[in-house]
Image (tube, rainbow, N blue to C red):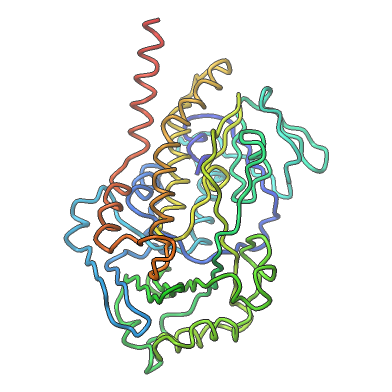
Length: 403
């Protein structure tokens, strides 16, 4: 998204990708109104790449009794944009195309995408990047968007590393048609646009649709030690670790038969597990002409549907703060302004995400009620980072010109 924003401002953009993009991994992701408004403004409509409207949320017990339900038909009338559920691969493909396409749409020169380009080091003072194969590239700004396992993070926050959260997540996708065809799961799959959570004292299962309501995304959260082989079996948080299906089923043996049937239908060989990581808030995200964004700056736990949205906000902020004509001498100051615009909000939403991820048992402290979570989400999704950062730049330039 940052590449799209900088491209549309008229800048020359180079994107360094460690992988060869032979295959994309991941399941589904929320694009809440605070992110979809920014995508739409950039010319990307989630409904054009399989975006599924979120219509309802439910929280249920492990015995399948409904504790809380929220319909969004009335609430969405006040949203600044729609709330979509999308497949990560579809989102990634749309973003890549928008950044690198050569259409004559007046959106600047296509970004240059260099795959197989793992970063070895960054010189923040000169905005120079050295790749592991020895190539050297230099620009005016370097942005580190290399995820929770970021190698570039050390250049803004030396010594900062993610730590285990204590939970691991099994994830898989199923065709909705398969659930509709099974007598035990037909009813729960009948509703479109519905996200459901089933929870007991220290574990939960979440299900919601994507890809135009044709696929169902599943995530099952359990204590690390209950994953086959223990915490070491899921390593350092890789998305692509194949899971032991029998171990997952054992984790939820006390859940209602209908929930267990959903788990039994998980595809052999395509069931993945990852050890979820968290990280303390960083002291700062920037260093001279270098800045972090996305999970490299603020890795999110998947308990509020805001991780991807906040990364998109970061990108929109950076693009707004660097209009064409920005001088190299202004880069460090603009990146500091970016941190001012973004860090407090990102840290606040991360904190509430952790609270929302607390176990219903209350051992880590009380988990917010459904009503409290909805109230916080209203704050999160009502923000427009493009407009906010633009206004912050306008004020910054006004003050600067008066000196």
